[in-house]
Image 1 (spheres, rainbow, N blue to C red):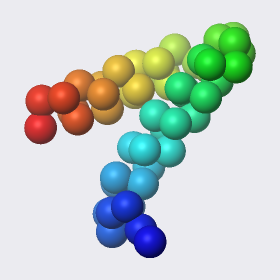
Image 2: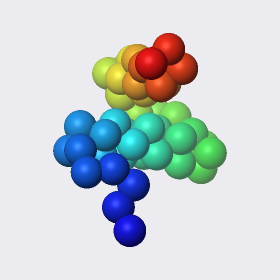
Image 3: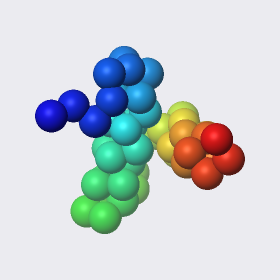
Length: 49
């Protein structure tokens, strides 16, 4: 069962889950600054929209 039928939502959730899983696993150096910025922007998008 799909969560949403939007490609943009899928990319957003994929980036967020990638960052969260790598942070939980302790692989902070694997993530680039751009990934952190994208994750923060996507979290803010979900909070304020």
